[in-house]
Image 1 (cartoon, rainbow, N blue to C red):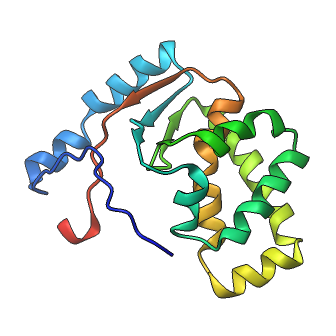
Image 2: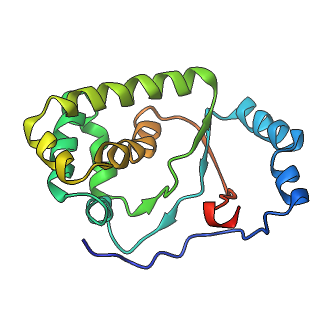
Length: 167
């Protein structure tokens, strides 16, 4: 699987007690709740790659899983929205979804349904044996498609992601 260098916006912060306190502060929670008054969800700001979703997907997972996933999504009634997956090169790299409780519940039910259907597919099971994190990699890529399919009003914001090595 090929790797492409990806330059997406990052904010580097030293994990000092004061910086961590700022990230955990009630101010951040208040800001998120204000955004959710006028939006259905908050997502990481998308960025453009020189490849489509299929190529990006194939960087991390067996490409055969892509075809199995598209078949499952079509059977679940998302066929019309799959053009988003086939033609988009704007990626929401982080699968983080900050949303209203009912939006999270609906997405969770959808993701668990997809996982259950995938688990019953013998071809997928063979791929899973070779790639143990396959289901996690597949499900995290469902967030932008699900948001797009349901025409949710998203606020795209830069997010700070502290990497484990920094802590």
